[in-house]
Picture 1 (tube, one colour):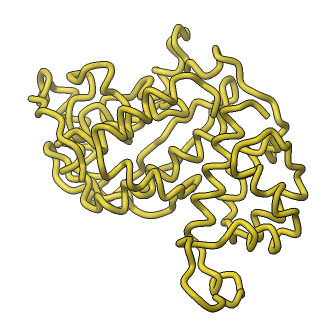
Picture 2 (tube, one colour):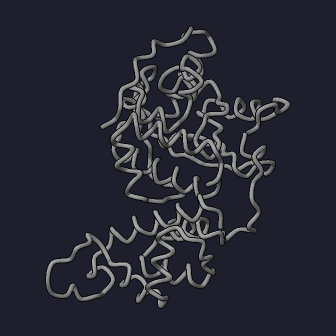
Length: 300
């Protein structure tokens, strides 16, 4: 494995091990005070039926190249969920897909396309729809998403990242009715996406910026949660039409599987009517010009 992937795998294993106690996996705590807050490396090695030294090397980020069966045993030992297990396999270089690695161009998004993708987004109106890359950079969106909370196009291009907006911009922080839960889910999704494109050079600057500007993001990222999605209802406070109850559907493009289209569908009649109202106001210029953008603040 490459150095970046080996280091990330080691860090992920340590984070997941720290979250388990001996009782969680059916082990006796033993006498005396434990010097680690979670399981010991030796305990994980025993549970996974691998050598203690070898497992230590794995956590240290050495190039030991675990096989699929070993990764499966470690996933069982750490009580990983399906999403967490998939993430482990990706980091271990044994993805449960066809194993093809995306090129740098494929990760860059649909820039320079012939306009069909933007037409697709517009056709989904009045449902807010956005196209994002694996790092949650907003590549394109329709008018309903653009004005759902604030005017996306009034923001600096460097700020047009779905995760960055959630953790730093006041309008987006205030616009999430279930903010704490939404942040937890978003970070878990972002980590899952990172496993797919781990070696892309844009990850480092993004994660550094988020950690530096949002203590909340730093805490959630260090928990190492992984999730590929959520069926929960999102509750948005729109400054233009009021409260919205939405469910999201995520579509992957066949031409670029690492690009996602996220569509927000109304959960109830009231939300459907309010999305229609938003679309009508946009069409007649009722939402004219860029909305005032408040200075970013960190989410703590």
